[in-house]
Image 1 (cartoon, rainbow, N blue to C red):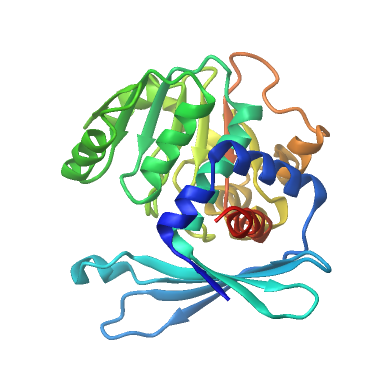
Image 2 (cartoon, helix red, strand yellow):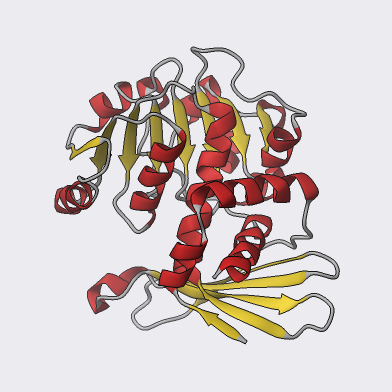
Amino acid sequence: MRVIAAADVEAALDLGLLIERLRQAFRSGVICPPRQVHEIPTLPDEGASLEMTTAWQLGRHIGVRIATRFPDNAARQLPAGMGCYLVLDGRSGALQAMIDGPALTARRVAATSVLAAGYLARPDCTRLLMIGTGNLAPHLILAYAKVRPIRTVLVWGRNRAKADRLAQRLSGHKFSIAATDDLEPAVRGAEIVCCATAASEPVVRGAWLPPGSHLDLVGGTSPDVRETDDDAVSIARVFVDSREAALREAGDIVVPLASGALREDDVAGDLYDLTHGSRAGRRFYSQVTLFKAVGTGLAELAAAQLTVQRA
């Protein structure tokens, strides 16, 4: 069995190669049972959870992602989310590799977002707003800068010091980057708004989104958690990574469905539809587009297979 550490994952997963591997994976399909999430009692009660995601391709590989989330880990100087990804032989069941989970997830999330943006965001986008300052934020910023001519990046977070540190960390790249305290003007001035937060209530208002913008919702993968409001899904052309999973797990989709602000038919499609060309993405220049990802076993397995191949 191979053990693949975080540094090896980052070295192996070239963004361009990973995007194309994900595109092919969504076209070909993988067997993905529903994600399992278990609440883990702790003392004190902090809402900890254990999550397991599985996927397999017949005769090739079986993938299992095991992840924990302990929200109060910051007080212990530990990440809130930890875990690993296991790759097993699809013919014998033998364990072939154990991969660092957070590193694989960060690369996979960023590649999934920009894969969708290739169909939904305008090709001339130069202004990116990153909402959130966690582990995913730098990966998302750099991924967008590779697939769009980004010249200006603003970073907003509830903790201004973290936003400043993130901006400083990425200051040597080809784009200018700065932190901001003014969220509404930042959204109104952005062409791509990427939101990766732990917010339980809407952070981005649909009324703020300018014509022609693209809203990428990365955080919030439970039915009662959302990053945007009903207005945003009402005005936007909405796509998700997996229709079945998003209609079940994504609060940004589930809540407006329950309120009547969104109908199932209003979800224009998912990455299967986009990569097959069966549904058009952006249809005109001034259209607002929205992509909501909850994470799929298909994308995780594809990223893990590429990691094992190249590490």
